[in-house]
Length: 314
Image (cartoon, rainbow, N blue to C red; front, side, top):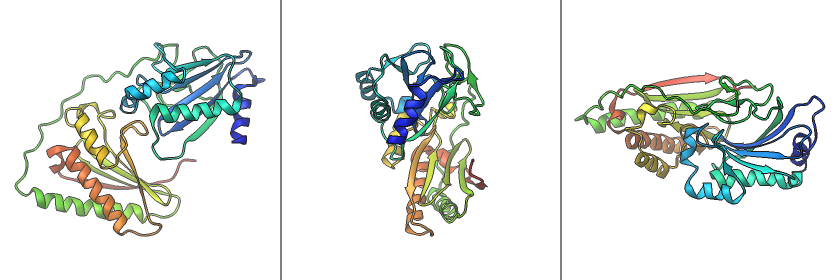
């Protein structure tokens, strides 16, 4: 905590000689709380992620959690769609750091993963550059040196334009050999999950299971866990007629987190170091159930399995 407090002290309570603004962020997946400081000013402005920048935050920003943010002094901002709290004067660095972590927890819920922190400088401006709406971390202030594909300038963050969405093809009828199809699909899923789990070394092992527009993907980056995601209508709006709130509740019963931590429904499965077995069998069963309960009869479309390896980002 001492080193974190020192970072907050430098970024938010001291003026940068180069005249840049200082920023500290805590995040859990794509859920974030940022606090920033402009040079020669005493105020610190804290922002929490909103639904304009990341529409999928509506899953985690329940009425109760919005009320919790309000209790902490946050108010909805018309310009950015985020939640803002202005401190003037601010609390001491240690208390401000604790406030940020607490706001992230009560405002968005915990994914069970470790909260991460980043910090740095931004070009000092009353309306700093932000990640454009509809992208991961949409609405967040962009740090200098960070590679961001879509950046929004100006004081107002414009919502994402979904454009015209072509409707999905008609769902297939329930096939007569549905049990056999499910059995073959489970076998293909289980073999790919074993392959992901057995991956070693620095490369990421990724398996993507797709049924037309619908997909589930799994990644093993480090022992001892595997993260799997089920596509959401937030990433592909044309899936809304199928991926309804009722489907979201069924996926939640299977252990998936609603979009917020990720753009998709996500679950982290623990793995026993080294080998496939009962653990991967349970993962495969969960994924097969997710497809059957989430995709309707679209889950009887031909299953495509893609296996990829990728080097971790540095």
